[in-house]
Image (cartoon, rainbow, N blue to C red; front, side, top):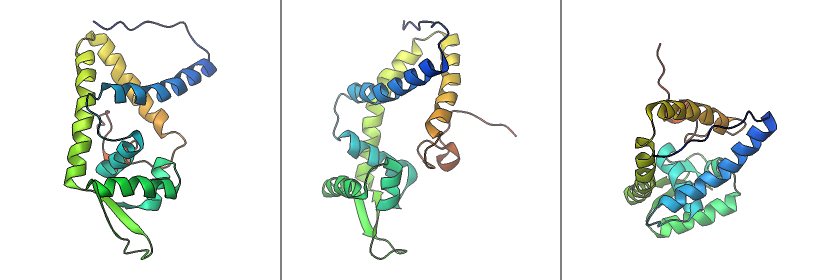
Length: 170
């Protein structure tokens, strides 16, 4: 059974530092859980935005990814050659293009996501009920932290994508 160690009461600066370190470590941990990765982290990230948010122009995707449009264009070029995204002319700005995930791209992304989830689900299954309840509370807080100071992100912002772990009642 996983052990969750209680901590001494840290300062706000120590908590902020721990959050930043965790934010850097968690993607590496999740990548390591994927037994058969087929995408680089930048390809997976861009494809994930398109899978969750739908079609968008390259500028908007670059904004979500917080990278340059040139970098986004290179990543999309690789994904397009592999048949994972399709590109069409932007009807609003005829000079630009709109990209979206293909069925193959969505399938590949979801398969990789599921390979990462399986060991996490196993780990969560082994937690005592009180630790699972604490984890749910922490997830709500982490969603708020992830949205803090960032552009509206349909993958993070539950009002954009409806992916929040929280249930609301009227």
